[in-house]
Image 1 (cartoon, rainbow, N blue to C red):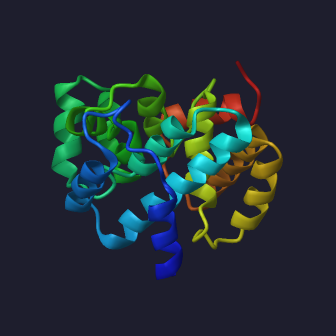
Image 2: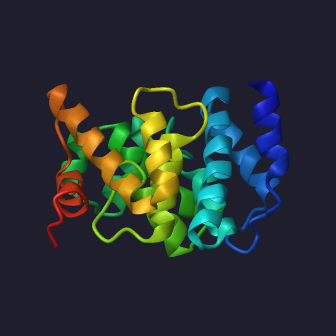
Length: 208
């Protein structure tokens, strides 16, 4: 496992200064301040998986890699950080009824923007939508969404099937993941944030 993680760190050739105020080394140091090692290593694997998927799908691997790297930047922040952002940015007040599973992407992208100096809308939207999806996701959002789901250490029952589907057709992978995620939430009687329902209706049910 350690060797695989080291390979991922060394394979990435981008410094990301085209899209962030920090270079990759500085971004990694900032991430380490807010994430434990398990989550940090996950982000490295998602970064590399996103680069691979970008190359497969004809989109910029540097943009995809940076989105993958920082997708969970806010994952382990205290609740107070998210509540402050929700209130200061006048976001949907219904968000306050949910938690980090929604907040770390749907709100956390604003922390990525403010603290890492990333202003590219493709990256910010990929971070924002990487948990719940969205209608009309661009390829970068799709790549980040799937890279998070199929990175090599994902070993839940649907991961292998998702990998096979995604490497054949990225959008089919998005449909598969969104459907499975919604089934899981419903099966556990979990509250579903309304924007996630809108995403499902578009991605899986095909409503526009």
